[in-house]
Amino acid sequence: MSSRSSSTTGSSIPAALEHYDYRLKLIIIGDANSGKSCLLEQFREGRFFAGSTHTIGVEFASKIVSINDKRIKLQIWDTAGQDRYRTVSRSYYRGALGAIVVYDITSRESFNNLPRWIQDAREQASKEVTIAVVGNKRDLSNERAVPMLDASRFCQERDLLFMETSALTGEGVVDIFELLTRRIIDKIQSGQIDPKSVANGILADHLTSRKDSPGDLTVAKPANGGLFSRFFKFLFSSCDPGNNDLKSL
Ligand code: GTP
Ligand code: MG
Image 1 (cartoon, helix red, strand yellow):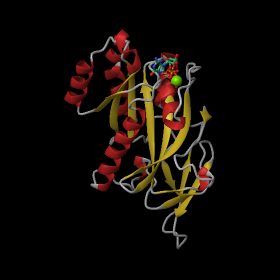
Image 2: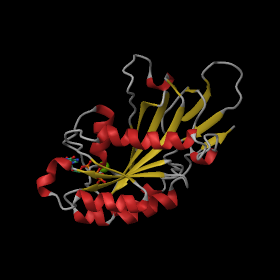
Image 3: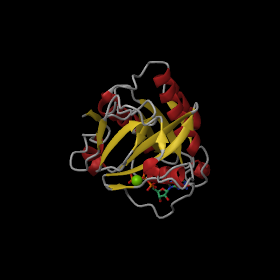
């Protein structure tokens, strides 16, 4: 597993010390070659990575976005779509509150495989997982094999978010990450999801990250620097990828 970290803020404060209100885990899943890694690169860096090769296992990145006056640290796990990595990839779904399920609009097969990926997310991620379906490679609409209407009907029937994107041009990329995050935050703020729930993998209530890298121990404390009501350890372990939940000390 490799890891990358970035922030939208552009400040000189190290990302590891930046304040955030919630930390959420998202996963990106779907068939190999659908463009998952390119979508993540476009979201993180605002550029198309033409030399993308198959992801092996999973890759990790983080980025802070602002939604509803809250700063949200997204911890994003980009998984391999190749069948041979399916078992190891699925073990990283645990605790994810958001899943972006990607298909390639020029590949009917990748669209036909959506139910399988969605089922995986429902079985392995948080039981509160919000799912967004993304039809990627919109720039190749002259080679389109999946009519947008088919996809939007599929998603409507299952109450899934849906958007077409192009990791190449950037169209729709930030929008789908923000739409998904907004939907999750709405659920938290309306009480549908308990932000204190360890099982939900959310770190909430004005916490400041002290050290934040997968494979490392993260200790968080209230940003006001006052008495700590709680401490958490958030252990990402490449040896034990299922161990992604918040853990009370
Ligand atoms: P795995 O890691 O094997 O699961 O694949 P992936 O889903 O991460 O695919 P990746 O992002 O590596 O992209 C696969 C291929 O599609 C690469 O050759 C990319 O250059 C190309 N690609 C990705 N997104 C787009 C897009 O929006 N438009 C076009 N034209 N090509 C894209
Ligand atoms: Mg990839």
